[in-house]
Length: 192
Image 1 (cartoon, rainbow, N blue to C red):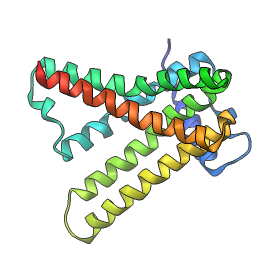
Image 2 (cartoon, helix red, strand yellow; image 1 turned 90 degrees about the vertical axis):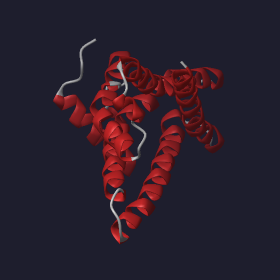
Image 3 (cartoon, rainbow, N blue to C red; image 1 turned 180 degrees about the horizontal axis):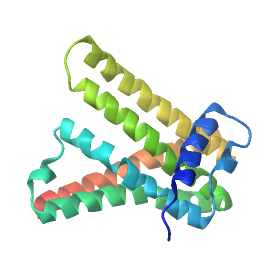
Image 4 (cartoon, one colour; image 1 turned 135 degrees about the vertical axis):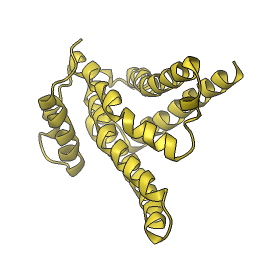
């Protein structure tokens, strides 16, 4: 599997913007084939620096001081964090009869992590300071998170053609299953 080129990356991030604005035909900016789906996971590599910097600033990067095992453990948790939701989403989509449209959701879902990952990283850097600007960044982080969840809800509803309750279920599944998988792996890593 080849990695996506710069044109595909830029087109996909632009597609997220257009999809967020509800522009007609925005979904056509994404490669929603199986190959495009697997290439969309390259967003995980592109956003990794933002995740690492956020972890360092939040004091959650103890693995940096550790040995090879801690680095491997972090890489495994990061990878599983990216893979859990697509797996759960495919299972749910199959059960409700929308498996044929699941790549319409998962490809943009992966790519939107890129701009939002760096937005949250920038807000984390600002929050690390003191004063009213840091406080404002804290509040803005909450609104950005709510905005991202709403965007995911709207995309699930629109791209899969499901009810509001089902769309909420997809968003909830993403949050719950990804968090549980990450925390379980963290517990396992610290107990070894």
